[in-house]
Length: 103
Image (cartoon, rainbow, N blue to C red):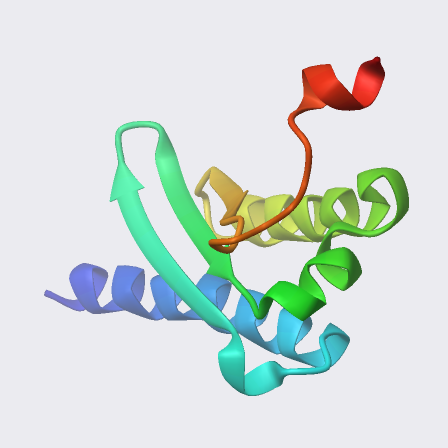
C-alpha cells in the first residue's frame, strides 16, 4: 500500500514540475493544462497552452521544447520512469506542415 502511495506522489511530482515550469514561461498561465497517462512505454505528459503562447513553448528552432524535454528526462531518471512530452497544437493553428516549410 505504501509503495502505491509513493508512486502517486511521484506522478504528482512530474506533472506539477511541468505545470510550474510552463506557467513560469507563458503569458497566459491560467490556460496551461497538463494531462498524464502511463502505459508500457512510460509516462506521457500532454501539454496544452494558449495558442498565443505556442511560440514561447517551442522556442526558436525548438530550443525551448528541447530544454523542457531534457529537464523532464532528469525528473524521470530521479523517479525511475521514462517521461515523454507531447505538445498539443491548438485548434485553428496556421502552422504549415513540415513538407510545405521545406519548399
